[in-house]
Amino acid sequence: MKLKIDHSSPIPLHAQVEEQLRLLIELPEYQNGGFLPKEVDLAKRLGISRNTLRQATNKLEYEGLLVRKKGVGTRIAQKTVTTQLQQWHSFTQEMNEKGVEFKDYLLSTDWLQPGEKIAAFFEIEKDSPVLKLCRLRGDDKGPFVYFESYFHPKIGLTGEEDFSRPLYEIFEEDYNVVPTISNERIKARAALAITAKRLKIKKGEPVLVRERFVLDPGNRPLEYNIGFYRADKFTYTINIKK
Image 1 (tube, rainbow, N blue to C red):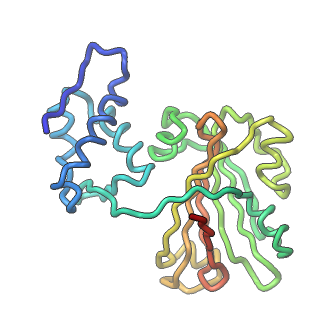
Image 2 (image 1 turned 30 degrees about the horizontal axis):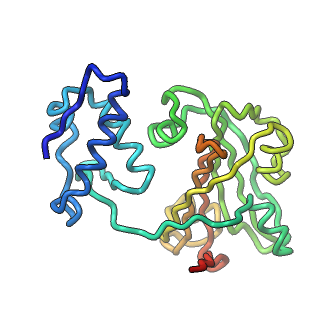
Image 3 (image 1 turned 90 degrees about the horizontal axis):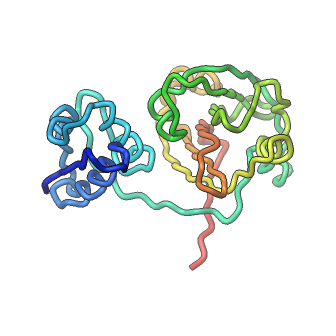
């Protein structure tokens, strides 16, 4: 397949590259596990900077279409099942509905630069400050989940909010922002040392990792959230009707 970018087009270069990559990854040689051309080679072929190319590949990686490993390369992600849940809530609302009492072992906020992945999802510059919220939650027996949330600056959060309240209640009641769509990725992995320490488990024990990409009714990004759950405390179920 011949890749071609129209440098005179009003369509942004990164958007054109993204569309070309979507066509490229449908080719059999890549669907069967082949690696994409090296970043530097692709950039040269298209006559663009590596930053422009990375902006496009970051978007596809966020969508779960690409898997990139440093020093190895970029390849097509294995096919997974993606489903949209009819109803979803913040953790506080979920636990309240189930009648589960919990408490915060840690609750902190900070302003920081988001990094490539979150900046790509928010469609902002990497040096734009975003609010980060960390919460370690559990019951009387100990912590069972650790969350990190990053919020789009446009929401207007200050970091001084009462985050013991349901998060999406704060969005809607205080800032007139309505979270509508949650794209989620769920996987299991061995706990790293820092996660094991937080959750009071042994390093290498299984944890459930859930990434949540939250958008408003116009598909505009609001929040990136990642949660680490003790595998012996949580079972994640999805009910699907045909």
